[in-house]
Image (cartoon, rainbow, N blue to C red; front, side):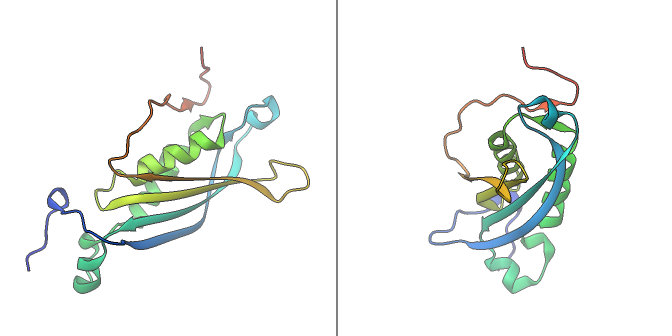
Length: 149
């Protein structure tokens, strides 16, 4: 059977396979308080990418799977120069990046902000987005040095 091109994939019925990216450390400005916004902070991301990996499991070819290295590079490039007030927006931005890959049909993002709350190891937000689900309009993330009107 010939391989389908990325734009010609058919949606598979039934459960999809999962690719886990665990404990991805990113540094960016995130928070609402002045002291939080003064410098970059650690954010730990955990991702679950749901995709049909049937062809990749047969072919052993990177072109037939989700290239998680590329997704990691895109996340790092997008987040590190960006400023967020809420970790919820940061997690939504990560999900949007993951869903750019046409193979990813669903993504689960957990964003941990270590040390955000006294007496707690971290505070985390978990969200799930699916391809084709209705999306609410979102504000663009802030670039360093910019301010919301």
